[in-house]
Amino acid sequence: MESNTVRNLEEEEVRKLVRKHHFQTSFFFSSAAIMLVLSIFMPYWELSLEAPQYPDGLHVTLYVNHVAGDVAEVDGLNHYIGMRPLNEAAVLERTMSVLAIISFSLLAAAAILVHNRWAALLSLPVMLYPVAFVADLYFWLRLFGQNLDPKAPLSSSVEPFTQPLFGTKEIANFITSASFGYGFYISCIAVIFTAIGLYLHRRRYRPPLQATRDGTYLQRTMMSYGQTSDDK
Picture 1 (tube, one colour):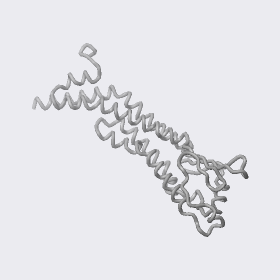
Picture 2 (cartoon, one colour):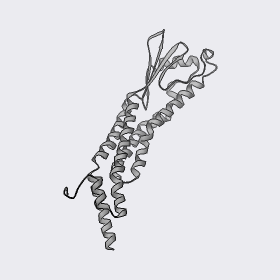
Picture 3 (spheres, one colour):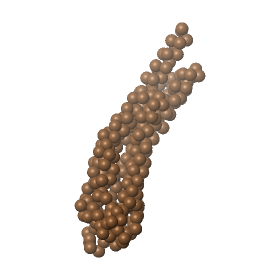
Picture 4 (cartoon, helix red, strand yellow):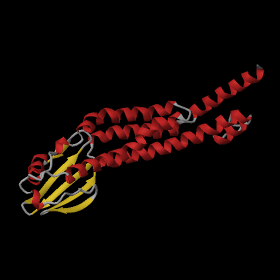
C-alpha cells in the first residue's frame, strides 16, 4: 500500500513539473491554431490567364470558401470549350471549410492540455490539412479539364487538359500561370509549428513518465528539465 502511495505521489509530481515546463509546447500549438484560422481570410491559390485580347490578363483567386476575381469572364471563356463553371467545383468543401478549419485549430489547441500520446492524434488534422487541400484542388482541376463538353462551340480546338497546380501552361491562345497563395503557405507554417510542438511535447513528457515506471523518476525528471536539487 505504501509503495503504491509513493508511486502515485511521484506520478502527480511529474505531471506538475511537466505542466510547469510546457510553455514552449503551448506556444507552438497555440500559434499553429491561430495561423490556421487566419489563413481562412487569405488566398490559397491564384490563377492568371494572359492572351492578346486581354492585355491586363484575367485573374482568379481561390479562398477556402469562395472564388474571387474575374470569375464571370473566365466562365464565359470556359463555356466555349465545354468546361463547367468554376463555382460548381468543390461545393461541399467550400461549404464546410471554415467550420472544419476552426475545428482543426481547436483540436490543436486542445493538445496543449493533453500530456500523453493523444496529443499527436489531436494534432493530426492540422498536419494533414495542406496535403488534403492540394489533393482536392488537383482532383477538381483534373476533373474539369479532362471532361470537356464535346458539344461546346470550340470543343474541337482544345484538347482535354489538366491545369498545373503551380507554374505555367499554354492552353489554346492563353498562357495560364498558377501559384499558391499566402493562406496555403501559412497553413504549411502551422504544420511546421505543430510538428515542433509535438517534438517538444514528446521530449518533455516521455522521460518523466518512463522514469516513474522504472523507478528512476527523480533523477531522470531533473535531467530532462535541466534542473538540479539545488534549483529546488
